[in-house]
Image (cartoon, rainbow, N blue to C red):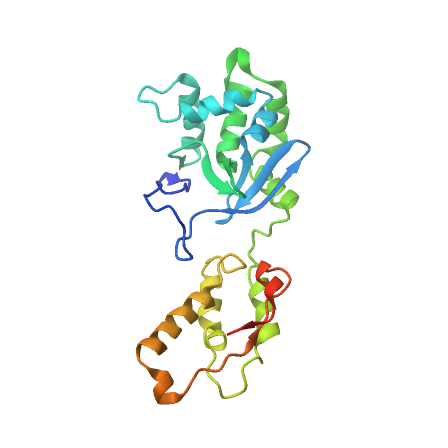
Length: 255
């Protein structure tokens, strides 16, 4: 069986700021249910945080942290070998046990569901005298796809992607008649492009407003070529954001 690789964040570059063009992983949804921290990353990966995984396994948080710190040692510990062996049996490999994701000013340690299940299985059956009854009970409940389904359900995430167009449709409904008929509007002209990006999996939402970037480049092109002198000044028309976008606080905006 060909081994698949679990996605992880790229190595940090020297760039201090992240612009709209950089689509690093973020946290799409998160929640804490009965002391178990969980969520879904922006690429759809369900995860548990370190404390949540420790609670499921019936071990101290530090034990999970040690697994992460020892993951890539030149001479792997028996525990790491066992966990990686569990992953290998289902065709998975991972460069790291967790993914570090900044969210609301705090770095979150996110353990993808497949790695959580491998660690849970280890503590359920393969840890010798360190096997935990909590891990065994939870593994029986969450094995297979049950952990993924539980995380999606608890945080309110739709893995089918049926709702990914909702926020874009909200903006279209509020603004498609903003510019008079016959006038060129970046927002209207970008509809098909942005629709295709969303269908292809691009995260277009309140955090990634693609038409703003298009508008800036169009404005620069217009100004650089002196089109105001040739065609007259551009007209601005009101643009409104739905309540799901923080930009709505300054409605209406000129475009």
